[in-house]
Length: 172
Ligand SMILES: [Zn+2]
Image (cartoon, rainbow, N blue to C red; front, top):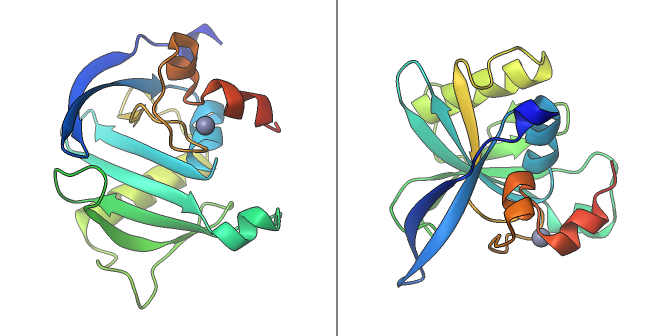
């Protein structure tokens, strides 16, 4: 699995008004990407290697479903729109484990919005496990645990996208 372990990138980020260093990490296999994206509180950036376009999304599991340990939980997807990483998210729609994205009445953008088109393309590639990771597209976690959202500090955690405690709770 050496190919999934790429060197992390160090970037500076402003969170909550104070400068904090976050270390992002690239996930390069579909297994790693899927586990991270559906872990419950995942923030990640998709970057097109063809156009350089990037979008940052957040995928959160519906709390009631997580509490009830529902087999096919509902996830809420939002898109980072501003510079404030904590608050400027716009609701995109509902995601399920089959990777179908459904826009709802509350969606803040339509099917043809570039961020939605890009996400649907990515989800379709993920469903078919197309070989696009690292060739057409990069998947970066934003330096926070995909399950609980806490900042990742341990090098191994940055590689995995999960903090030490959540690492132990991984089921698959
Ligand atoms: Zn965690």
